[in-house]
Image (cartoon, rainbow, N blue to C red; front, side, top):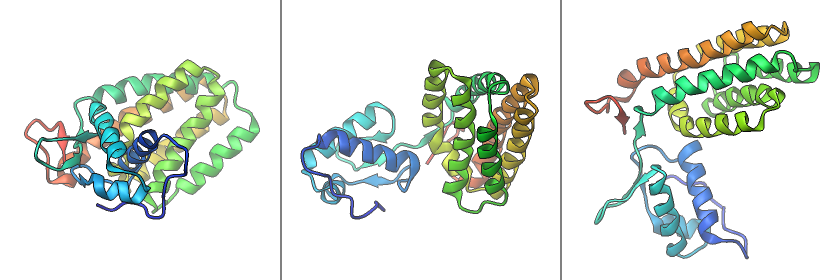
Length: 232
């Protein structure tokens, strides 16, 4: 079970909360992979706490569907589930497109310059984690410019649920290339301050993202369940 090293907890913190946050980050952003065993003794030793807060944190994560705890068996990172993903991409596309439509009339030159720099860095990006990070940061710029905290909150929750799937899919170089090209189109629409074009470009990006995920699942996992909804 690969875990980051040298990460002892500071004194006077809620050990359960910190263990929960660290484990959640490792599951969502890496290095923990779907289906991987999680040993509470290893985590406790790494964080410098007893096993009790780690076990409590794992129970919380199981309630959120991020880990699976089976009686008499090891705790493991939950498989990726695609039955929700299709609906998350569908809703996310609508919300993201709305944010882009608003932001097209509010983005200033500093924000546009930031978006240009991100797109330039996306071009040919080979670092998978950095590619995914740039993708999210790009959207965050125009979410903030849209000026709707409720909208941002919903989009952040959607992204959190999709992050594990995107982390796996972004290992595919063709997926990264197509995502880069679609972000160029979003950028062009935002630079022209065209709300309609920005909405359509953002919506297309989300719809195509799900199409790419569907096409990627079977040939790139080799562990698709019969209903094609879960992979290990």
